[in-house]
Image (cartoon, rainbow, N blue to C red; front, side, top):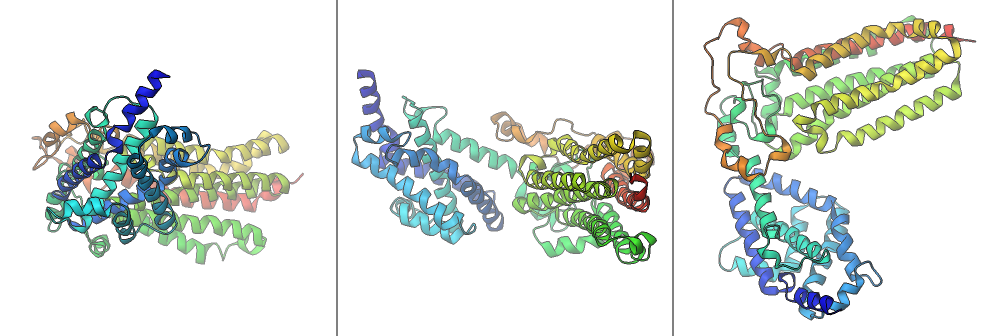
Length: 518
């Protein structure tokens, strides 16, 4: 008991409970915010603030868990409250708790709103913020960023207290200030060269080594990058020449072809005229999903040069969602045709496919899914989702025999060939990985490495005024690969042919569905 008493007495004197140290921590947060302000314009600062506040409130339940238990009678940490023995200490903790509760009820239930967040900060920490504002004027964005860093640091302090740390938190290498420094370092690395890229991107296309790290995806595509903070300019760039032009138009043209199938080819077909309402509804579900997938892809490639990182990630998720919906509806069309005479089995398979598609939808919007190093994760996910269609084949083979099932599914082979061939190009980055006109920097940092001190020390080595050229500038050096026939361009063409191949294959399956009658 003596040891426990000493621990509790020590805690009561810890920086967590000191109003003076709260002010010190706030000043540290303010200092960090100033360093961010130096590298971010108002527009980019607001975008980053929205992203940070969105991230903060999306995890508000986890942040509240230990704090709420501390103040709840009989809670997991309820006994700690009784033993703190310091009214000022409890007051600072209570203020933190009240702030989180207010954020949860006022912001989380509505939308990310900077004015709301500012009002909450004034209500709970206005006295601290005013002490800084009296010595130097705080800008609106700077104030919100300071408050956000301060709240994160306070939560970290509280969690460390509950876990029983005995050393002064502000003197530890894992202290909130150190964590804050790591967070700022990560931000500085992510947005290194950001202002210069915006300035240069107004008048010209950029090369790979001018882009901030989060905008770098394929290290073998060197030239032709847009970096625009204006969506209208991005929209106009559809008709301009850059390294996304081919990607945009391959799927825009593909979407037009699919629309032709929707409104002209299929309605005039024999299968449409003889099919039931359910048959035609299922076919149109696939065709509309195909149009949506191709348009979503064109949308992403049109706007992926935006300087707004938060929106850029969301635009990428729109593309992934289009692919997921297309794969799911493709599976459903084959299940509907193959199991036409087995309605209970058909409903079971279609329901399961829909559930998997919905799960995939949420997976598409996870932060990890969009990282460049997750390329093979994305490929694996889409192949696994498509693989669900095989289960219906085995069920049909069990019922009518393997030979009849193979004959019935054979028309889909043209779709499989196109899709799988495209995946090989997309995943292996062929042919651009064989370019010899530039020296490609192979050691690009991954997401997990951003924020390290070593990377910050050597960061200039990742940014070059111009790509290092070789003496080989012939046609065979693939200098043109940035704009035409890259792996992603080829993948796009194969996706269009894969969609059309699936349509023609399913068309034959619908036409021959009576072959599975028993």
